[in-house]
Image (tube, rainbow, N blue to C red; front, side):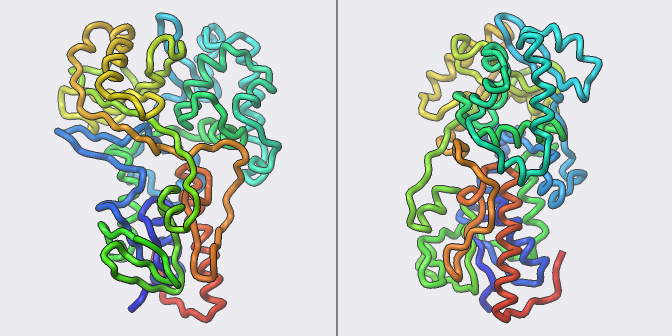
Length: 423
């Protein structure tokens, strides 16, 4: 029996789409080229360490994530709301004083910016929280950097805080990302926690996949092309359905749709095993000195958040660098030199576990950026995911849900009978 809807890709968007279709009483089936669900969200296990592929976190405020995910089952471990910033030769804590008002004196004296900058953070917060998401994505748009300058922030706080913090989110050191995307992420940081599942980011797609009817996903099967309402696999097999949804990453979606691929931003992530963590607490560490201090943009110790990330008597250190064209060994030499200047000679005892070069870590979000709407290519072909929506966990899930809802209405109008809904 053919499925009602064939979904290509078991990333978050494809999983969300299939779940919504299943709940509506339709029969979805997912074809996935990899051997596991998750798309970009992958956690590798190596010698007892859990390695998320690159800097990946969950913003707990995301409305679509709150609706779809069981946060208790994920056992989320939050970061400190703020960061530790390396400025000159010292680390300085930057705190969200709305959550930690006791840190206000420390924040006011911090060299991350001047007094006026810290007052302007209040106005930026008000702006980011104003209105719903539709209103936010309808605002006049510029780049994040220009928006910060328009709001009167000094170059000092832009370079010492905004650039390393938000460039680390978007993999965009120039902050050329859309001001709408920037304010959306600022809202997420203000209203929720930044967190990791206790056993790795891959728990998120595994949780979603586990809710589908058994055998709803075929792994290790690549779609070669789309033809007349069919998905033609690399093996030559042809699969039919009443509708097909492309829910792959942007480059693969462009290939299947016959369009030009969009550029991507790259990142390189090093993982080191250390006898002990270089600092205590669930902090994200930022380089506020810029590239003059070395290549590192950010650093974290996932094992400080959850002991499951490292074996007993070990700590896991993750170091993130912009770009993916570096020679890993030469880059590691520069990274270690910078780490020694930060934490001393104990860094010499750190052992490199893995290095991930991710040339397609994230699509750029340069203007124009709009909130996604269901995208229909033909009477049988639909698209969701990063090809059709801004890249984030929220929009991936929301894009999948929106296409599923539109498909349910379309198929019911065409007389397709639904079955008993499945939760």
